[in-house]
Length: 323
Length: 135
Image 1 (cartoon, rainbow over the protein chains, first blue to last red):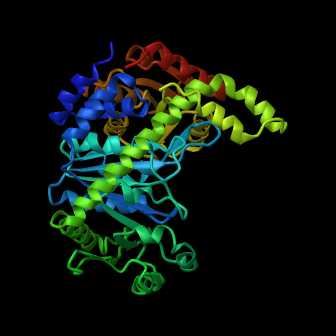
Image 2 (image 1 turned 180 degrees about the vertical axis):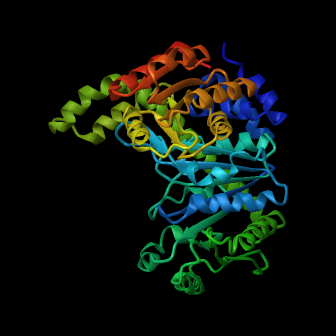
Image 3 (image 1 turned 60 degrees about the vertical axis):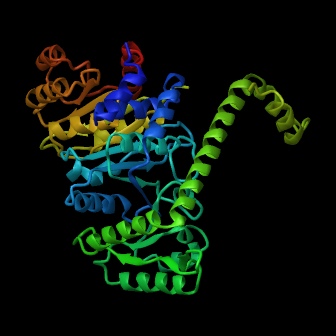
């Protein structure tokens, strides 16, 4: 017999990681019997520092996470990692390989790593990623790092989900810095340039600093117009360890700046708003598919032959959702 | 709504042959499963910890080194010790016929050895998860 979710919740509060694992699986499978418990977990969480880490594929995110976690552990803080990789758009399956870069952390009891697949989610996050964060938060983890899928230009949801967003850029993609500056580079609270052991990394750092100086996102100001946070560029090397401690100091400072200002409160509200909309959207989508799946094939047939238009058909389908 | 079957594929010990396990990973992905791959040269404890954190339905151990009689009992003991016996353990690779009975006795649910067609792997894992039921 499966253990009731409420019982897993009691175990979770004592730091039981088996319970954490199982609750995450139930959250991912949208188990209706677990929703109430997940609501309780949400209310009991809110203590951990949620750090988002994003960047293009191959920019060194997973390796950086591995280094970062080892370094944070030296201060005794417990660290959770949610590592997200894409699901296949065809089979729905996935290969989750972020753990391969984090093998040095597996035997540390103060570290928990969970891989998640996007399962049709398009913003760079997995649908249940934030629920998994709540679960780890409740289990007593101090810092929770969400590593997004390797992103393109537009997957900026992480900024609406984390307290501190770090965007990783690798050297050698100089032209891409230009190309993507209107998208993902805007969401950074901290810019990280990885692979700084490489000679061309200075140029990437300069490019980013120049871009920031041009005023795209120069600083966050409080009500009296005093800058609370100026977006820094930190160079790191996961190879040599250079810059990792500085990155942690910067990350902690960002947390501090937000905890002590109204901006932090604003950000928490934005996260709550995003989360509520996302959850409602998922519920709506699921109900839509549940209540229309039988009729859709007949409609699709007509639409593909241009006997019916998608606007009229959608209107009709939406009118039929059971609430 | 049901979730994809979660599988951890592990290479344990001094065994650098990973072409096979990568083909299996790809096959399972194409069958709609979530596959977590650990990479090479893991220890039994690393694999069991990962299986628990990832809450996988199936732990697949790929062995071509001949060390199965040492490694498999260690993994089964650790799963027991850490209260994770509901993990379905499947072994793939090269194992002599005379060792199969022993491995099944210690709790390995199925052995998918050389010449197993990909479809059989998918079918076996799906069946084993179904037989276990919800957890």
